[in-house]
Amino acid sequence: MLNQNKIAVVIPYYNASLHIVNVLVKLPKIIDVIYIIDDCGDETLPKEVLTRFQNVVYLKHDKNLGVGGATKTGFKAAITDRIAIVVKVDADDQMDTKYIEELITPLINDRADYSKGNRFRDFKALKAMPITRKIGNLGLSFLTKAATGYWNNFDPTNGFFAVKTETLEKLDFDNIANRYYFETSLIAELYFQESRIKDISMPAIYGDEKSSMSVWKMPFVFLPKLFKTFIKRIIKSYFIYDFNMSSIYILFGLPLFLFGLIYGLYTWWFYSSQSIFAPTGTIMLVTLTIIIGFQLLLQAVHYDITKAPKSN
Image 1 (cartoon, rainbow, N blue to C red):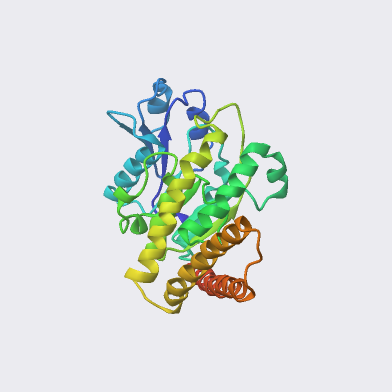
Image 2: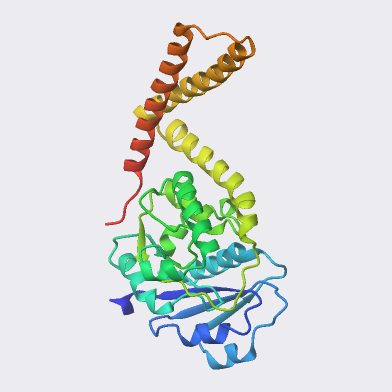
């Protein structure tokens, strides 16, 4: 079945001259085309890459666009060349490419439109993951679930994935980030196409290649973007593209909850400053408003979770 589909690998290349040849050597033979996108790093691509590997297509940017920008260049080339499935692999040799066949199988069998690695289903691999990456990935994974709407998928920031080019053709690449937010913004766009995502359990490999982003900077980079993605998804999904009971829950639940919370804080401050007890009726009003608003929001969350696109 694999031979009936043209498979390509897209590799964003940036300062990975010590690793790129090893990455290419380990790629499975089912790969028809390898797109290497040189993203203007300090290290030039080793000459061995172009002389030794005949199926390499080398593309070079005029300026640095980031991992997302480089990957999107590869996507566009694959679409032009009528490739069926694209696999994105990093150039730093921290992805076990023997899992490529597992990644593309659900796509070939039409059980998914996008498949990606999940480093959190393998307990041994999870134990081996550096503690800072473990904490950061766990936190970001949960927030990304809420922001993108893919509640049933984990490890969404994993950059080892496969996608159908027919799915890519439906996306607006201008809405997909060029740098660190690339994978998350890609998944967020897939949600609006109701694309099915399949998790593939696999370990991560941590070698001597260092990330250019500090773990402690990640919350400041991701949190504002995740919040913006969440708000955009809710507005589009429940007030532009559709209007349903969950829309009603949000429309009434959010104002009630916020009103109860703000009024409750104000009431507590006011009566505390006067050194007197708040009236029972006021306390009951605040409590009921918060409870009703919270219950309505819980109903909206429940609907949102069940609405998430699922692979077969």
